Amino acid sequence: MSLLKEGDKAPEFSAVDQDGNNLSLSSLKGNKVILYFYPKDNTPGCTKEACNFRDHFEELTNHGFEVIGVSPDSDESHIKFKDKYKLPFRLIPDPEKEILKLYGAWGEKKMYGKLSKGVLRTTYVIDEEGIIVKVINKVDTKNHTEQIFKELSK
Image (cartoon, rainbow, N blue to C red; front, side, top):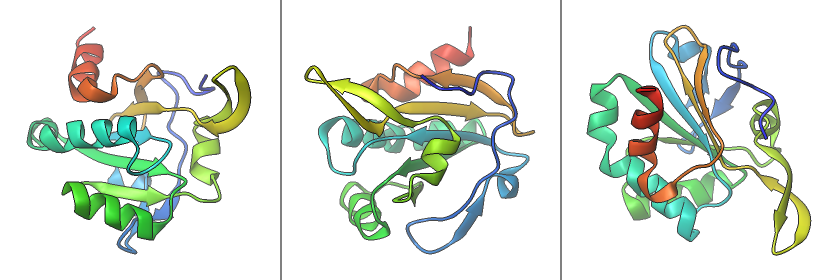
């Protein structure tokens, strides 16, 4: 479960995307941001989630959203994932799990009855001023864009 909640200022981060471009939250000020954390490139749920964002990318950008995915995968893995599925948004490699931890998206989870540490699939919707307006912990990977719009209309 995330420690961050709606109304909180989103933590600043600086990173390099899969193409080697610098990216920070403050550089996106004035834009709405969908910052989503996912476990692993090329896995079934993560692929469904990324492809859902891809399929609705024009709608998301028309609503002023920047979409950014973060996982512990390497930049090489992100490049292959992005190319394979023609993903039009940026992916941030976080092998040291710094951003994951900063956003409470790394922690204990139960899988097949065993506790282990891993990525807690979480999406943050951040407004133009850097304030978290929605936190989604129970992600519907197949219909995530629709889920976000539904949550925002509440």
